[in-house]
Length: 227
Image 1 (cartoon, helix red, strand yellow):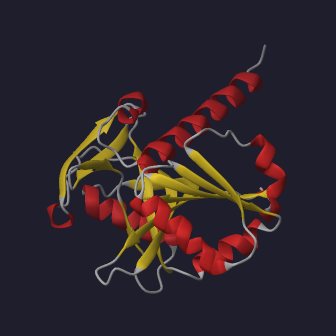
Image 2: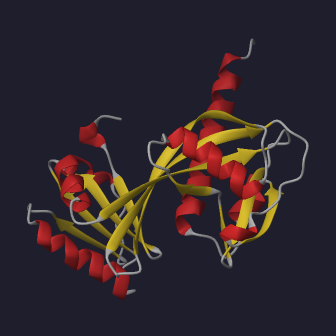
């Protein structure tokens, strides 16, 4: 996807701030829970949309559009502190995915990058530490997610997480990292994982994205089968 066609989805609480190029506006599905506004290049106005999604449940999403969505995203990122992270969808030989239960909500293993660390390295390290699984093989990148939150000083921060698909090649059972407040862990079919509750909306969307990846792969394999 070219930068001109890029779409950014930023999770704020359980709601979304969506940044899209103007020429994609007609393709976007609108409803009464969505506020759609043009971005006119005034950075300070972005704070009002962040406030709206943080403090009100009136809208489930706010869509901002302009001709140069890259510049809009750069303006947004200049207003927050960014913390890069890496995480993974881990699948076993049966095709099940590993879910963790952390702070009373279902999640996937992930964590912030250490100084000098690459996203791939952080994703593998964090997945190993949080699940106790050593025999992980990186299969490829899935997507990047953005999550806005407040730190202890009440400043706005954004966690930029690059997600990777990993295959587990070992036989040992997963062990939750209690030091990271992981209370439970287990293998689930993708269908069952999508039914877990409560679950972070960003994680549910990531699992849905993974499902579309699997469907495309299956369709491709079917087309390539000899007739």
